[in-house]
Length: 104
Image (cartoon, rainbow, N blue to C red; front, top):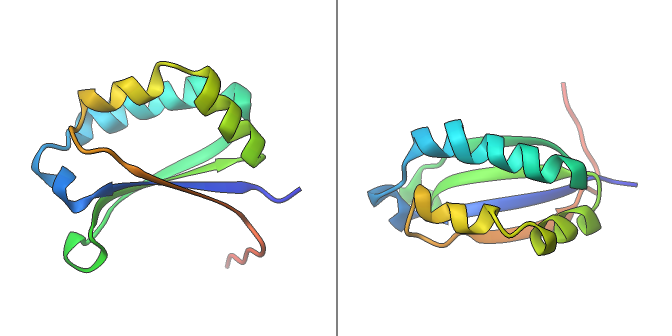
């Protein structure tokens, strides 16, 4: 089965109050701990060029399945409330299955 990518995108407005130290040092390890049992395999975070993309931060979560992500979101009541600890801006979330992959 192909892995599922979950893009968590924080709009450019988040640049005004985004606490990257908290996000990387506290929130993402919290996500890893809570969602790992639901099939979270990896994550990466990028600071985007908000002028061209309209977004400030992108987090890509790799789950074994879409169902694993959906279960993590429905069962874990701690991750989403923690967002308020690093930004007041609500993220956009996009989910998709990997159809093909290449790496050098």
